[in-house]
Length: 271
Image (cartoon, rainbow, N blue to C red; front, top):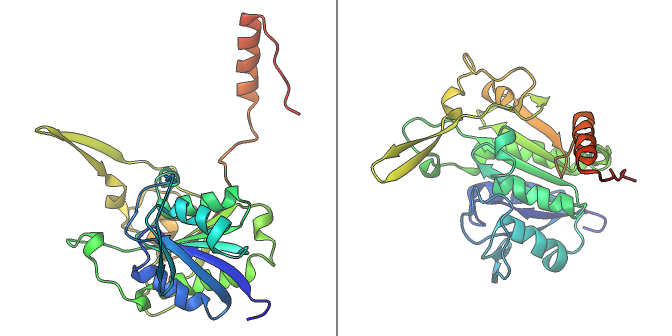
């Protein structure tokens, strides 16, 4: 391809998942793609890392017996030739809200790339579920057309548009395809959190109740959040940084000064 973009593609659903196949097939039209993905499902593992992993050749690239973060480290240092961009996904199921940022393996891969100072895009697809569990929902590559369309566009254009001058990675969430292209919105992660637990006999059952309120008519998340955008049928793009830090820390400065005064020590100013 000559001057084609070099893309490292990974996921957390496993290298044989439909979502990564859909993204791979779309990206190969515009980029040289190296797939380095978990050999099996490693969903919700965050940025878990291993000390040693086995690597196997696969028709798409490399299957790693490890986590998405393992795949990024192995890919960026050993298996992929200096990629311009890391893409994680497309994940089966959305990754919406602040509380999932440390939990999701898809996001974990993008964050790992950001620490390498390689721009990254994490793409996930919201799949409405009724009685059938998400893991048992049958999906085709056509269902991922919103994901492949927006991911391909971002891969082809985001670097030249200087998007990553201010963002370490993009968290992209899309609605499942319905035959037409979904509208798009720049968003921020929702702050809602709805985990709880109940004891049943000798077990504790953990419940994520946030998915019970994805009805667009009653969703409580405010305008501009990723969850509201996706629930209402829009593509959500949240520009994020790693690490998640703040420049507003006047209150902490006062507290540190008080600690220093009470213990007769100095406060060392940051350079």
